[in-house]
Length: 157
Image (cartoon, rainbow, N blue to C red):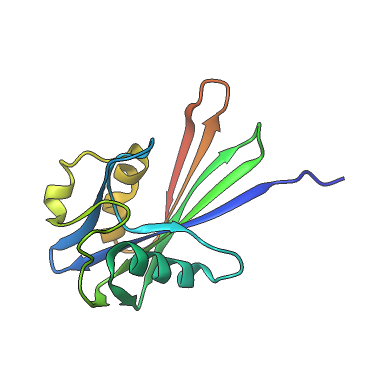
């Protein structure tokens, strides 16, 4: 008999313009801080299609030529949940930023400025990896009993 695993798929798309990146100042629920645009992939859309749609919904920008940068995932062995976040970078975009974006204020920052912004640990951990050659895979095993991150494994390719 096979265990049932609950897969949840999300995307993040870092939008870069020269030495600047576009971040959302997200200030609600339990995921506050500066984050790149992204969100849940709707079934049965493709993962890249979900990333493109989420950027459009959250920023108003149309993106293309997304470069896959890596996978960030949370694995909870107790609840058998696996949250997979596919991370992309693009320098190709067009359109106008939304005046009242649904996820938070949109702000362009230099990459160096971003290192000092309030971010969730999961975003801070992978932020510099967007700008390195190659790809990454980060797996976080969730400590269900204490409701905190457990073991973190980072691999670069």
